[in-house]
Image 1 (cartoon, helix red, strand yellow):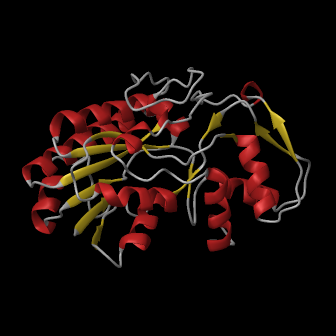
Image 2: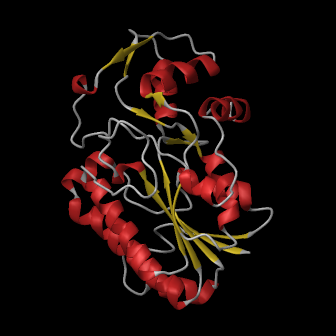
Image 3: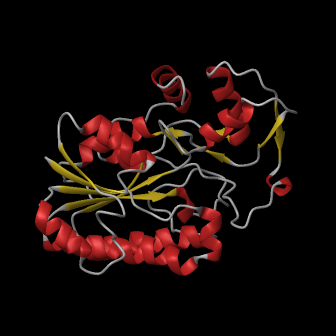
Length: 282
């Protein structure tokens, strides 16, 4: 199968290339080889490469920067996704678009499932929600895959930031303990995405690891796994104000996976253990 990946040099894109390269013909693209914001560029790329599937990882993901660069965020995350969806329809390519937990407000006291209404509180979340709508309205053979709290080999991610800071001497690390989510490895997502390549499943699928954690709990677990002796202290979100508000609850329920009879996502702690063994340097 020919699989074109946008944003192929990003963390998830790199993992997909590594994990799928032996079994599929991968067409990696980045901004230099496919600028999704330029009208006609997606159509020209798909016309020349003729992929069976497009996995759309490219996005403006700098959450805080999006607050001050809203026009650019919507250009990439909404307009760029619309360009790609139009090209996929024209060239009969299946589209798998990667989205985010930030499309939700984070105010529910339970995990969000796929049928919950989106309610983003940030420019990033609103632009990604608009991108989801563009994909769904434009390309019939689509699947929107929401991920969150992602980490993968080489980063950048929360895991890599904590490891870098913890390697230096200093007082206990202060890590937010009142935001909860599903820490998720790119390896787990790469495995879970494979059944979607063949088609037959459309709509929205949540794809985060099972089990929940706070950032504080995740930090203590990853430092323990990597054998880093550095104290960690819990703190509140209010102690670290950011331009873009973070969802207090980023947990995603994997209802669609069950409905389609697909394998469950692995437990986040098991995934972290496997990641630590496979990538001893992160």
